[in-house]
Image 1 (cartoon, rainbow, N blue to C red):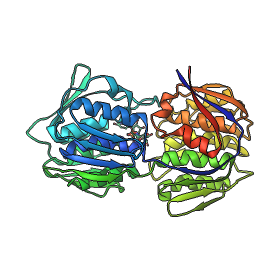
Image 2 (image 1 turned 90 degrees about the vertical axis):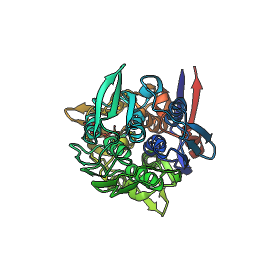
Image 3 (image 1 turned 30 degrees about the vertical axis):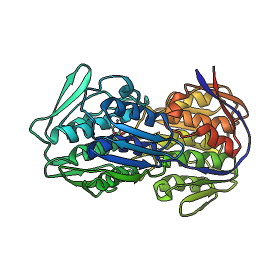
Image 4 (image 1 turned 120 degrees about the vertical axis):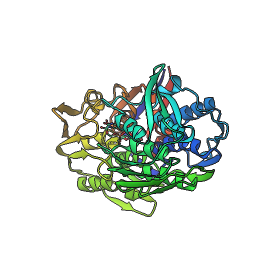
Length: 421
Ligand code: UD1
């Protein structure tokens, strides 16, 4: 079993370069199926979710060349077959649901097992299914997998109102609708930067997707798409994780390769706490910051404060002064980091629908468990702040989404290593 061991308490400084966005690339890779051609992706992070998707694409017949160092992925999807994908890697990540939209768009049918991913409480996919059905697909269950089949010889554009703002359902609808006949209009669409990134790749492949980044997206179906070259946007969640760490224990840290507009609500919270920063075109420098103030955080869909950042920022909140709370309105059960941080000495608990904390806290290293990806990232930040040794188990969750976390943290001065037991 692999574990991360951190001897905490070091001050940190220097520069960290942010990798391509996990939540973009996990949609971009399935999207290449629609090209039926060669697509080159640049800025691909070295994370295990990418490896899992490549393995699934390989089974389907895609020819893939990967240069991990350079972050380049060349995917030839001309020989891809719409074969049943019931088990295996499909259940290891959430984003495998994008194979439904991509295969349905290209072949008019898809048989894909139910997605896995982090346990954040209930994570239904009813909106995805509703959208596929509205486009003219029929859904059934075949050998424990979801089977989707276009009722006629193609899908047909229509207007789809999303009952909830959903990143996955918005992207999946864009994928399936790109090759449908006629116009699809997605109302109450999610507005995350990753949605714009997927729309940009689809458009580079010849699709006609307009309005991504607003809550109405129009897709004029195009029968045949083609190859393209695309660079993945920087990961705003990875950036936020390092910004939080830098604010807590930094003596001057530059977080490089960021689009600061993607982090507006996060930066606003840091400013409210009293964190001193210099924001440049594609980097944010965090200066040594002291006497920070406790703040309250409510997670909401983009452009509001991201649910994926509430766990990584928690250790920073714990080192401020005062009392505050976090309310996650996207996943109210996203609280698995709370007992782990409490075991490190934090005054933190879940009261009704809020995580409530009292600060400051002197965290002490101990044995903790990464229960999910972002909770794990929060524990890495907590371990770097804490005095003594923190040993984190279940770290495969963390490696699903953080490129070279050991190397990047080490370069900043964190005493961290990965051990094999
Ligand atoms: C994506 C991100 C995840 C992030 C989340 C919210 C990926 C691979 N994952 O997940 O990191 O935490 O957005 O920003 O990009 N919902 C339904 N029915 C559905 C779909 C969603 O009720 O069919 C609900 C969910 O339970 C949740 C809310 O809608 O409460 C938002 O979920 P959604 O945006 O779909 O999250 P994911 O796309 O799964």
